[in-house]
Structures are given as C-alpha cells and as structure tokens.
Amino acid sequence: MTSTDKNHWIAGLDEAGYGPWLGPMVIGFVSLKAQKGTSPSAPWDLVPNLGRAGRREKGIISVADSKKLHRPGKGDLTRLEEAVLAFVTIDRGESPKTFRELIDHLTAGRSDYLDLYPWYQNQDLPLPFSAEPIDLSGKSRKLERGLEAAGMEIGEVRAIPLEVQEFNSEVSSRGSKGAVDAWAMGRFLHWLWMIEDRHSIEVWTDRLGGRERYGPFLYPLFPGCQFKILEQNKDAQSYRADNPAGKTLEVHFRKECEDHSFCTALASMTAKYLRELHMVLLNRWWAEHLPELKPTAGYPQDARRFISEVDEVRSGLGIDKEILVRSR
Image (cartoon, rainbow, N blue to C red):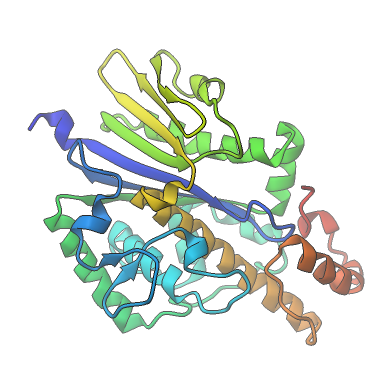
C-alpha cells in the first residue's frame, strides 16, 4: 500500500435550515480517513452497529438523511443525538456535556456569535438532551472499535451555523441564500485543500438547487491547480483538482446524496441536530416572556404566527426584528 493509499479522506457536506425564517441555517461537515478505493457507503456495510433509517434497533446507531430520522418541531432528538454525539465523542476524545461545549467543538471555538442574541445569552443546555447517557457511552465505544476494525477513523465533525444576523448580512452581500449556501460549502472545501498532510480527498454533497454545472464555483477555490471535469450531466457532476505536488481533491454532487454517502448523511444529521438545539433555546426564551406561546420550528407558515405573537414583546424589549427574522 502506498503512502497515498494510507492518506485518503472521504468527506461529506450537507445543510439544514435552508427554508425557515427563524433560527440558523447550519452547514455540517464530516470526514473519515480510509484506504483509497473505499466506497462512500462503506461504514454502513462494514461497521456492525451502524444502520440506516428505519425502525430503531437496540445497540444500532442510525445514520441517514436527517429528514428520515427527525421531523421539525418534535421534541425527541434521540436518533439525531445518538449518532452525532457518538462521532463527536470519538473526534473530541470525550462527550460534550453542554450545548456550548458542542458548539465550541463543531465551530473550532467560534461560539461568540451566541452572545449577539438575547435567547442564547447566558443560556445553555445539558447534553445529551434526549438520549440516555449510559446507552450513548456504550454505543460510542463500540462504534470506535468497529471503525478501527474496518480500517477507518474519524477525521472531524464540524459545522458552520449561520444565525440570522450573519445570514442576512451574507445574503445582502452575495445576492441570494443559494449563493450563501455555496459560499459556506466553499469554506469547507478550501479548508480541506489547505491541510498539508491530506494528499487524496473525495467530497460528496447534494446538488445545490437545480444547478448542473459547478466549475465556475469550484475554480477559485483551488488556485494553481489543474482542474478537470470528470462527469457533468443532469444526474451527476464530478470534478477533480490536482496540484503539482500530487495532491488531489474530487468533489461529487449527487441528488439525494445522503442515501449513498455515509459522511453526507452524518453531516446532514449534525447540521439538523445543531439547528434543533438552537431552536430549543429560542423557544424557551420567548416562552419565559409569553407563557402561552406555542413553540415554532421556524418554517414560513408557522413563523408568521410566531413573529406576530411575539411582536409587541419584542418591540417593548427593544429587540431589533432583523436579529430574529431572516431576510430570505
């Protein structure tokens, strides 16, 4: 096996919260180190206590598109939480005990944005939020052993939460929320490319809307490289960047990518779990001021109701509507 074979990375990207008016849009990122040629679906096939969506089974951690494991507005986050915290625990070396500890890990210490919002200031949540701690600990240990036996290891689990104020600012400067989604994805791709000891990388992600050509978006991320279109049609888009030192990065865009890329599915769950924890704190804070207020998942129809019901209190507290409601 060559040194390049030993230094191959499979990564996945996905977002949660693209459509809501309230709360953050979150982009999740997950990477695994594996032998070159390893299928993006390999963890499902090779690690005994990993499963897909479906009925819960004892001892099994489900990893799938977050929409198949959790419905917005439902309080039980167990299935999201088991997977995300199990992998974060392996990545971090210990389980995060609070929401803020989790944010600090997933954002590499960039949690200061929380203090811009009254509903997050001086607020926190103990973790796990829904799952049983003892059960989660056992699953994490078994998962780590299973990955090692399969010849894989966690690279990192990360996220970019774009809360309302930053989201609105980026939409204003970039012109659309689709452009903001692409920009956030580009931050992860460029970061991956700049890590010196990763010589062979493949990234799997959902298509961005209905776009079928990604060259103009990708070219600027890899300066000084040869760039090749591997595949570009209505069903699949794949590209490769090569630098003179022999480093390669492939990016594969697929519809419903979470169904065949394990890292993309886990990135989807990470983004969704983080968004849902933000919404728990937002709903709790407003309920303290309006005890009869029903919680919201933040999606447009119910967001209208929520925004209207809190408007008088919001105004009385001197809270700018622009830090509560997205512009798009």
